[in-house]
Length: 253
Image (cartoon, rainbow, N blue to C red; front, side):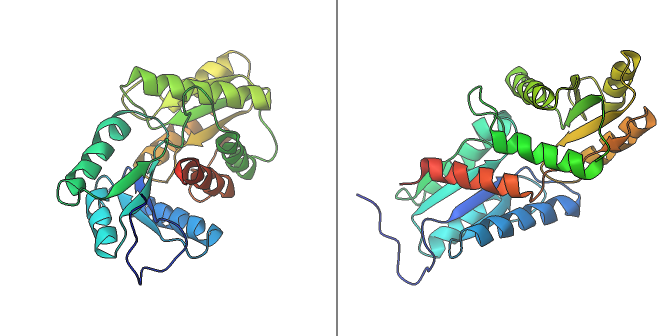
């Protein structure tokens, strides 16, 4: 039986808890709040709450407890992550378990991350990346670097590679992956390799959800290597809003 939601909570449907990575850079939190506002605007009356795994409050455990205090016993949790690596496998389940120790009746449905689910790359994710590229360089390019934050998880790196391959195929340009941390190559190295192979106008697609120090470092490295443009992070792009909502719908009754 579906647990009852207490009276006076308002809204249509179970609340949505967005869980972002978190950053010391305040621009990252602002971008997550903007995405939450855009998701809420797309589903009027449905409560959408942003949270962060690190650096910014509330964390997901705190946010879940606040929702329980507001009378909700069912929540849809969307990991705002681009790979299903450590944070999705460990941090998020631990945050949910911490609340359920004291509120065992709480039902939390956790969606897929925003990056590739299984092996499929969602068309909305590719469309959002293309939107940001067009905004950064409407004049076109003949080489592309997909710059990601980086992970030591080989499964996570493989999923980034699938996004790069899908994006390159859609745009019909040679594409390489780069990472801001944890794995080579850096953005500037990837740009240089494309230029050595004959690309004259190399652009960089930002596989980031929010601005911050990693994206700044990518921009500096890529431009020093001769990139003609570095796209902005996805942030609250309409395609990302659509992707979040479809992740929610996939686990909703």
